[in-house]
Length: 184
Image (cartoon, rainbow, N blue to C red; front, side, top):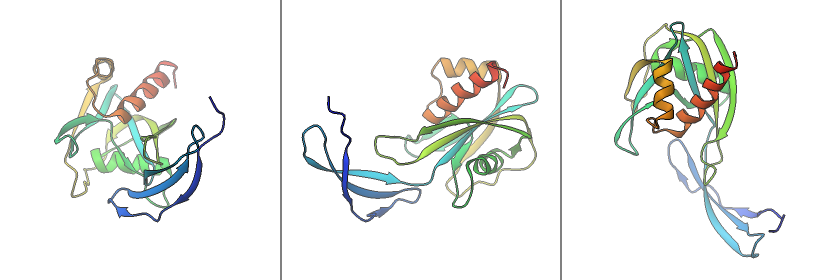
């Protein structure tokens, strides 16, 4: 196996604005065979996902209608980081907008690549402790979210039974549960 990395020869200008993302074609040279290939990369802002736990040890969930699967998906709240906003600000804003909840104590759980196959963005995970309903939802036109609280033990069982569809929820949940088990 060669230790050389893929060389980006050039990028074509972004070709399509897909609302949340833009599409760009990159021309790369393979270190394995020296051939040039054209690949597509979706470029976009990072996002944030929040595992918010209430004072009663419930996890705040968003039952979110997802157009890709044309069904509701029970997920942790989250969304895109706006321009000029840091990841934690985005996490706090998304929690409040999607659920009407806020929390006093926040812990950064790290990040994962959104989808490293063809995207250039990252998802930042947060654990919010002491969450409580402090406002009302302010949803975008394309959002349909039903808020619910799951007891922490039920949330854990659902996670390990494979009942969550969204990989960012699973990733944030694993990190959040690990942090809670270590005592924050």
